[in-house]
Image (cartoon, rainbow, N blue to C red; front, side, top):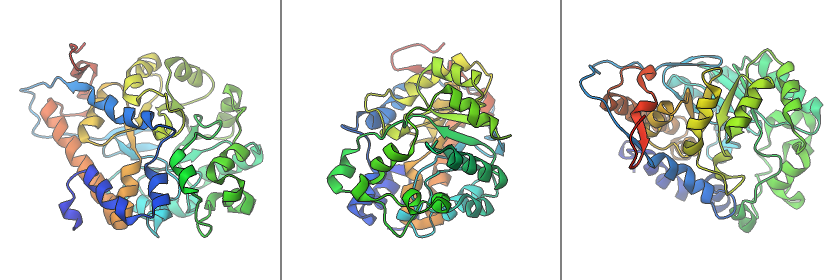
Length: 366
């Protein structure tokens, strides 16, 4: 089947899964425990209906938005996911080139197979760096300094992984990262940091050994003080945490439950986005990830108060199917769907998307 025959993101997932070895396939697609949070992310978007406007002259539409680090052509960025070279040999380089071609930015994982410096050379339209906070603050400080020197536009610090979630697919598969694909950003620290060992508990063992479970708002202040870049806190699910993060140096928040891979009882991000955006009240950008699969999901997110959304697993499916061209096709499909949804909702600009457009099924819009 050619990529032209894949007409939505679900088609790409169906095409990608048979191409991947079982362990890698389950690592990419799996969630924690019973995978209820994973399913809830998708279901939560579908509970929101769009009460569209008519007679609004939507002959031309402007999809561009301002995000920390610059302007992007449409409000979808690539979420940080680890180990892109398990999906395609060109890995994060292919992803960065595809993001640039589609006029958007990529958020590079700490745990990428390609260094931030290499990716920055391909990310012509913007690059953020996603930061895990190591117990060794020297490593954390060095990663921040390198991201700034590489020209990243923002730091997204992940805070929802003080310990590793229980991902039972990985346990059953005895999954381990391929030894020939290190976490390249950690290579200067040596093999212990760059290559998780299955004998030491694999990736979850790595998380529990290396990441700091004592992370607190004081540490957020310390991170913000290390850089001139805006620091966004990724993994927020509560309005009070969002407000507190802004009070301790954050320049924005990313509503996320780690793709359903940490606490399996977490709410769907669509259900908590609105209250968080209301609590932030325009003082800083709010972004969201989790379960975005259709252009109308992007519209729903922006109407609920997000500045932009982050797209995770579908990017990996695009990589597995066709490398850079596959990711471009995934992004192109989603962009087209969002543009059509804008027109059908009566919106000419992203600023036209507001809370009055959406309501839960059976309820009236505000």
